[in-house]
Length: 166
Ligand code: HEC
Ligand code: HEC
Image (tube, protein in one colour):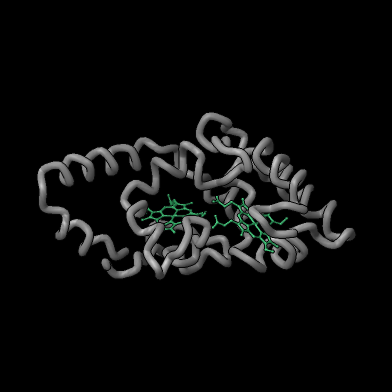
């Protein structure tokens, strides 16, 4: 992991305090169960939901969030993301069966639902937050800018590569 440059450039006491809070918050955040993350994704999900961004693992949001999204795919963040009919059932099944059940941590806080607005995400991404608007990342939804193995459902800390500092 390439956190070292971040730590070395964080020199003011205020930044140190903020860093300390992030580190504690990240430790307190409930871990995502690796087994849940590894639940096999049907090819139809990869194809239909992984063409504009990585196919997000179901375990990163609760069923309520996924249902919200599935109901408004014709206007999905300004895009039409309605899947081909044969794929719909499979996608819904995958998201329903493997959704996270911890509403407090993995429930979306926004409309439309987002993984990036869950309590869990905010706690684990304190350090990365500053980089979401970096031109090499573009948007928080671009997980693979930092999680190089995101396409394959790998989000472990060892696989995080932060873009170099601005
Ligand atoms: C035509 C392109 C397209 C397709 C297909 C698509 N999406 Fe998206 N999706 C987007 C865009 C654009 C965003 C908003 C990205 C941003 O915030 O910059 C987004 C955002 C999301 C987010 C929120 C990311 C966050 O911030 O946590 C989720 C969850 C999501 N999509 C799920 C899905 C699912 C499930 C499918 C398949 C049914 C799907 N998407 C198919 C374009 C697409
Ligand atoms: C700007 C870089 C960046 C972006 C973009 C980003 N992350 Fe992360 N992510 C991190 C960092 C840094 C960590 C904390 C690694 C650690 O534990 O030290 C992390 C941690 C995680 C973890 C926990 C890993 C573990 O083993 O505990 C998951 C899961 C995760 N991110 C998913 C996502 C998803 C899904 C997205 C997109 C919606 C995303 N991330 C976008 C940088 C990023």
